[in-house]
Image 1 (cartoon, one colour):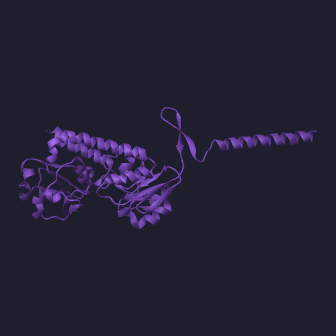
Image 2 (cartoon, rainbow, N blue to C red):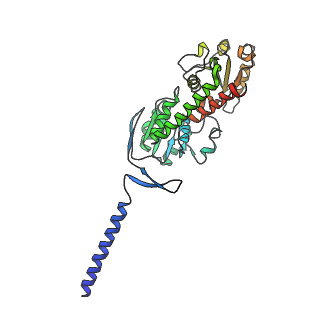
Length: 329
C-alpha cells in the first residue's frame, strides 16, 4: 500500500512537471516575442530572418540586429535618424571624437577608429550582430569583418547619399521608417523650393580648402546633390556630373566665381587648411570675383556641407540655405 502510494505520487509529480515544461515552451516562440511599448501595451516583434543584397553579395540575418557597428560617417547619421544607436562607430572626420551636431546622440558609443582604418580588434570585442561598411573604404577587410558578424557594404560614398540610406534602413529592418525619413526630407526640399523662388536661378559655386589642396566641387558631391535637388543653377564649369576639380592653382580662381560662393575648410587641428584658406580668399584675384565684390560669399561648415555626408547633415544644410537666401534678405 505504501509502495503504491509512493509510485502514484511519483507519476503525479512527473506529469505535473511535464505540463509546466510544455507550458513554458509555449510562451517562448522562435518566431515572435512580446515587446513593451511606451503606452504599456505589448506588440509582437518579429525575429524571422531576412536577406540583404549589397555591394559584396547577399547577407543573411537571422533576426533584426540589436548590436550594430557602423564604419562610415554618413552611415552613423543614417542609424541615428532611424532611432538606432550603434554599439560602435568610426570617429568623425573632425571632432573629439564625434561631430558637434551628433555628439549628444553618440554618448556611450564606442569609437572603433578612423573610417579608413577601423580597428578589427575593437569591433570584435563589441560582439556585434551586424557590421555596416563601404566597399570603397573597406573592401580589403570584408572577409575579416564577415568572420566577426554578418556584414553589409554600400557601394561607394559619393553622389546620391540616399541610395546608401535606403540600404542601411533595410539592413536594420527599418525600411518603412527609412522611407518616412526620406519623405520628410523631400517634403522639406519642396517647401524650401517654393520659398526660394527666383533665387534658384542664381549660380551657386562650391569651393573647399584642405591642407595642400584646393578644390572646386561639381554636382557628384554631397552638397552638389542637394543643390541639384533644390534646383539651383551652377556655374558652367561646375555644372557637370562628376566629383571635383582637385589641386587647382590660383590661375583657376576665376572658375570659382558665381552669383554666390559657399566655401568650407577641412581643418584637422594643425592649422594648415585654415592658413591656405586665408591665403586664397585674401588673394587679389579672389577678391576681384563678382560674388566677393557683391558680398555674396559665405563660409559654411565642412562637416555639414561635405564630410558628414548623411541625412542629419542634409537637413542642417537646408537650414543654412534657408538662412542665407531667405532669412537674411
